[in-house]
Image (tube, rainbow, N blue to C red; front, side, top):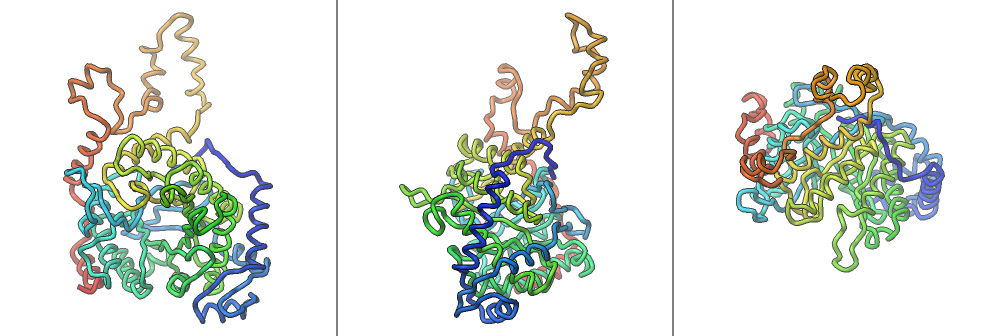
Length: 470
């Protein structure tokens, strides 16, 4: 977890007001579609204007939902301990979900993702101190579709104690997955105090809430499962090509979902955010890690903070096809912006190829970028030891601080070397193998995988495996 002292903003207060007002205009005049009869009835009874599937919202209805939603969300670990408080500027980094492919570190080739990849990613993420929560990182091709997400969740539970953010396609899988989480935590009392899981769900841009997404919203509100209802519009494709226009459309989708969520259960835990990026008109690919997407993400987080809601974002990813120089550059820039932005829950660490492929080596490299970002956003201390006036007096003009006690007592806090970065001189680097960053990342991944996994006890694991439907 990071608490940034060095911060960055991309929107002024006036701009936040302009974007909010534009979203309120769209919500009241254009509205959006809810393709779910129960939701339409509930929204109509609460004061929304319902015309067929189209729902338009008065401003006071939106304000009431924002006011009703809690300003913080607590997540627990597998053992029922509170480990993550999503509020304010606290920043937590985690992996992403459902990549169709994996970049195999042994062969260097892109291949189909398998269930064992879910376990391997959870294992490595559990060992990395910089990673706070876990997502699947793989959509396994070797699991039947009717139990795919349960198998994903079970594999994560078996390999990590960290909080899990999960996805499902079929809302019917939510019940078994919730039972798995409660079994892993040792009882419903732990779930109610600090849930071990958070659902990632989405509308369909532009402006459609399909029945499956609505059912996820309702289930999570009823069972106190935290949810992020996260639009993923493509600027110029499924949203306006401008950043502000894409953000406005996303706000309409998030806030209209939030209204329903809070009507089902006032005070139910909700995390505000979106995954935004422009469409490259020359390739028709979404630019996942480009500068505009980074700005749009940061702006959306700032609006969520303006509403005093917990926030969701993404970082640690790349559009590169390899864990290479481009991937390292894009990942590090995204991570630093997210850290300075104070986004509470930041996913997708370890993604390459615009979210289609995952890489354990990219995860390890990005963990070092998180460690560097943490040191940067801590800022510069000005306590007595940091100011060093007494040391300056002792050493005096022309002296050396190398042998002074002040250096001995403080150098470890000043010179920081994450595990994968190389600060050696050339001869020492050459004598130790002359390795590249990717070489060292591969070696670290292999070492972490060789270590004992953070496994569940046999009794709890048996209960969870029964719930997968095998």
